[in-house]
Length: 306
Picture 1 (tube, rainbow, N blue to C red):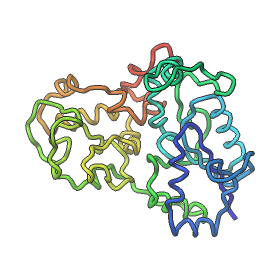
Picture 2: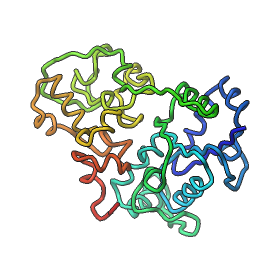
Picture 3: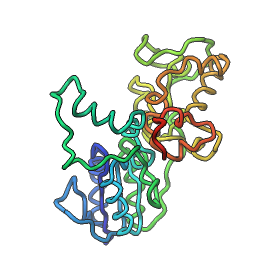
């Protein structure tokens, strides 16, 4: 029987819970595999030798790094599960600030809480920046998503425990979106909180920033169907990953310019809050930072060196 370990690093534990969303397929998984280590589910203190290790969350502190390295040493296959493990995820936005600013905001300078001293004896030391798991060790597979959707999880984990190669979708979110894309001349980019966008028309065609065209589409375009522009939680699309000159930022700029007939330089002038809006789920990714056209190096605190 295949043995599986689930490890949670700097995350919300939503990725581990998403595995339970397999519903009936969970029974098939457990018929052929045994989860022997999962702190969020089991009372297991030590990582055993396993066939498959599934790690979620980013590497935020020294303890995260040590657990990741131990997991790699004790597993035959190591899988990054969720966008935090794959690309730094939402926790990577901490890179917009220094560790001192982050801890100060949490403990001593937060208007919604009573100021308190940093409990240095029980809080692991923060690394200078947030990392994806692959920054520190070799990884055998990536399953991005925030969290990965249960259909995709079943399509990957079930074949994997049977020693079969899983078939995974390679399209962008736009491929699943039912909104109608149009070439409409406009000269203003709207903030997502402004106005009342047409529920049938593509967000980009209306001047709203939507990352569907540059995001890996394994979610079924749930957000755009619900009236919310894609925030990119699935991580970069394959064309962005494969090409050194392709980036989330320049991909969106080119798409808006193409649809609106605005010059790219005029689109760029109106772009706002890139750290959160464009790179919110990948700013902790060395892969994305090393892109020839990436804006991430301009956003990460200058005194921080990767």
